[in-house]
Image 1 (cartoon, rainbow, N blue to C red):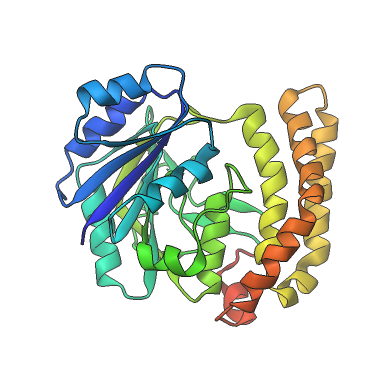
Image 2: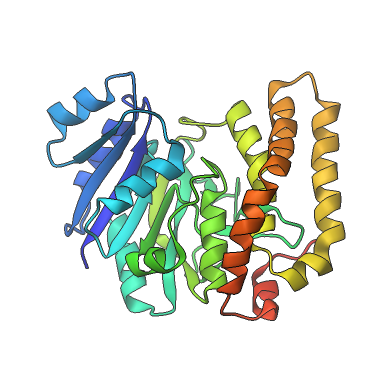
Length: 314
């Protein structure tokens, strides 16, 4: 299968050489590399043009954030498999081969999650696939735990962190691309949820190893705002009605607790950003409810199945 590796970039000139050099070392050679530049003002474009002639460079006039950049790359790509990769990563030589092999060998799987480790502490896990709780919180399996073999089984998980994930093009053609109204953060959770609602599985591939510079291209106030908003957006869009009724008290309590914690630290910019994000979600409620109608109308699996893949909360 031909693959397309899509890397969104914004002012990442200091990060790109490590990422692009690691792609040059891939054992799987049947792929193209596409960098979508979000209107960078550093030397990113010049760096790619001069030193990485094999890269397909898409220059956007302004920052369209993660979702907009990746979607533009997908639209201009040629691969049957779409791999999405952060610019602040280094991938092991077998990374793409392992993801492609997993997708080719499992007709149930339409997306795959990598094992993401910290760049500077390569024995520490950042993500072994995503989980999603009954009260509406996404999270990374194995986060901050030692890579000691506990996360070495290739299993089905809820979803894939799009910092290093692979998708069949046919999946994206059926359920749609990343939601550009999310901007960044949780757009991958939303896409994974939509894939599950459509009846497709996510396979975690521990042999597809990636090393990630934590928060090198994001984090802080930006992350707090978008997480505050998009946690709620995912619930509104994707949680099936029966489960929403069943867990609504837990969901509301969790949001109130997050808001309360932010209020206790109101002097901190990130806390204020989370509160602004939660308020922004209320403003986006009509838009997300409109999208919800279409998504829930296309659901192909039972609510019992969706509940079975959610992580319980106490």
